[in-house]
Length: 325
Image (cartoon, rainbow, N blue to C red; front, side, top):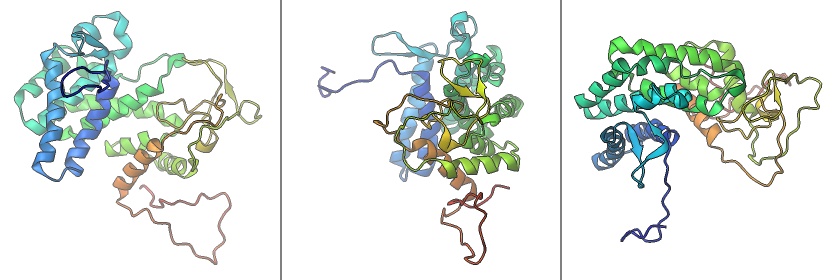
């Protein structure tokens, strides 16, 4: 607890990671543009957006903690990302991250120093090329937390895409295309809708699956025990994963999965050791749902049904019925 006058007994969260900063820069521009109503409110958000990047720049591309040392994961310095083999797995995502935050601040401040820094890191130090391959992982080390980070970072870039110099845009478009072609195999509604926001061409098969995933999500978020490994219709993956466990070759329907429903969970998980004594917040569903609503500007009302028309029992009744074209 703090002993600083005015903040006595406050508990401070230290060792802030790059993951947390990623969440801020995904949400804060949206909050400033769509929630803030007064110039004073917008200025308050901008101070955080700009101040965080300024602090990282002032500390030689590190996020320095109250200890005076960089946090464990708060590094974007080329010496760490390009030259330190220990951090090979952070190279691509952290490169994408700092570029997305720089272009965001440049958008709202029109200050050339942020664009100059974007070019220095992106071109001179190869961060643009690094960003294209952020989804490089060993098959047995597939990290779905990185999918969450990567798509939020790409969405941050594309939200300010008009401010990215035209000669550099293809790097992010390549990253978008490559990433979608990898993750689409497990039909993630959130990454599907984010990709549409980023002008990715998505076929109807995937948008149908995205909508179906929202419809099939369990109404309650209690972490019940789930066991699918005894099912004859589930083909198990024997190659293993980064954390061990039992997984399937193909993803099951959302309501049958053993993962907790969070976007950084493994969608191929078929068994868990839960006991029903905890509950997960519905944020993962809500984020995907509201992006869907934003894409369609729908009311979300139940569709009208013809009482005389017999419904197919295998047809999923949508509470969000508008179809993506």
